[in-house]
Image 1: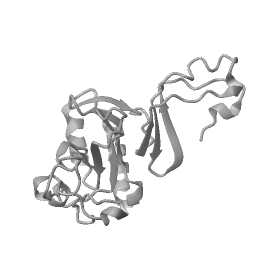
Image 2 (image 1 turned 180 degrees about the vertical axis):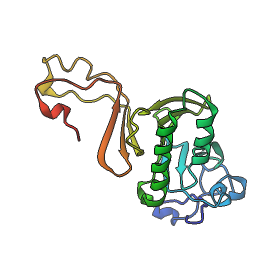
Image 3 (image 1 turned 180 degrees about the horizontal axis):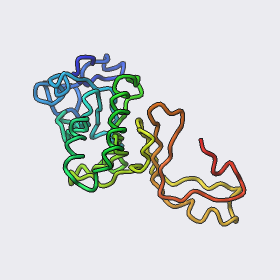
Image 4 (image 1 turned 120 degrees about the vertical axis):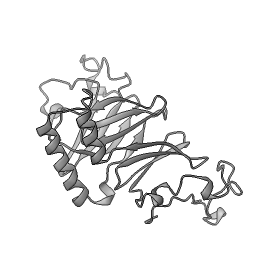
Length: 232
C-alpha cells in the first residue's frame, strides 16, 4: 500500500477476496502481520514500487524509492535478504577500492548524476525491478554499475552484466532461461548448431532510452541479412 505495508489478499471470489493468514490459507505460516517483516518498508518510511515472484512462488522481491532490494519468504513473510543499493552505499563502495566495483571517478560521477535525475523524473511504473532466476537462488537487478546477479545462498555478487555500457542506466528487466525454438528457415544453413542449447537471456529497458537491450552468452549471428543485426 502507499504507506509501505504489505498484505496478502486472495483474488478468488469464493474466498470473498479476504486477507490471507494461517487461519484461512494452508501455505501462510503466520496469524498476525506483527510476526512478519511485512511492515519493514513502512518502518523505513518507503514503499514498494515493484514486486516480483520467484518461479516456485516461495519468495518475492520488492524495490522502491529507498533503493533497497528486499527478498521475502512467502510463507513466513520474513525478510530473507535486504540489499542496500542507495547512492550513499554506492559512494562508499567506490571509495573502498574493490576492483570488482570501482570505476573511474569521472565515470562514477556521471552515473551518479544520471541516477539522481532518474530518482526525480522516472515514472513509478518504470522503476527498476529485481527478478529471480528459475532456481530462486539468484536475484537480478539493475544498478548504476550495471546489472547485478546476486547469489542468495552465498550472499555474494556473482556477476555484474553491462558494466562497460556506461551510456545506459538500465531499469526494468526480464529473464528467459528456456530453450529457443529453431527457425525452420535456418535448418541446414549451419546457423542452427547452437540454437537448441539453453541460453539465459536478459532483456532490459534503460532510462530515457526508447530501446530494448538484450544480454546473451551467444555471439550475434553474422550474415548478409541486415535484419539479423538490426539495432532495435
